Image 1 (cartoon, rainbow, N blue to C red):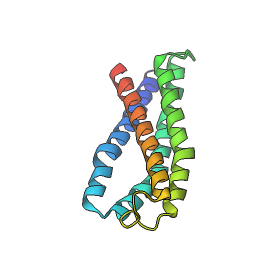
Image 2: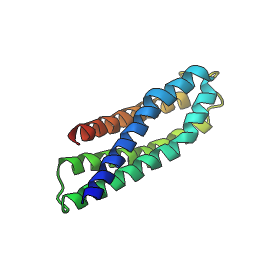
Image 3: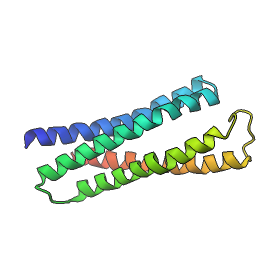
Image 4: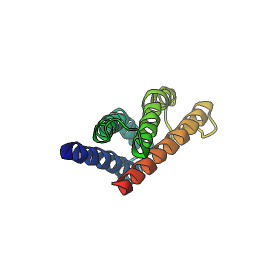
Length: 146
């Protein structure tokens, strides 16, 4: 069981670390150093892998947690399930809708902020940002619980 617990800890820390790096370092750095459209395209390219990373780390952590606790669902497992549900919502609903909207926007630099597609995209971006922070907060709680 020691290896299962170690794998659980690694999965949680890799998920939270990846989330924090993407959210607080990579994305702001790209938007600071590149044109908005270029930075958006790069970040958009990373999103599918970013979400897969979270889903794989989360699923692995949940499996390890359930194995270590003999199938008992306790607080950590509930947090993991909520994080996985949030990441799934982002990966399979928000991201595809945002990508479709983004495809209809020629340029974020020249398209007015009150353009209907930009307004819809901004709403989805806000939903995605909240989801990302929820996952990060859940991960921080799990790391504290380690």
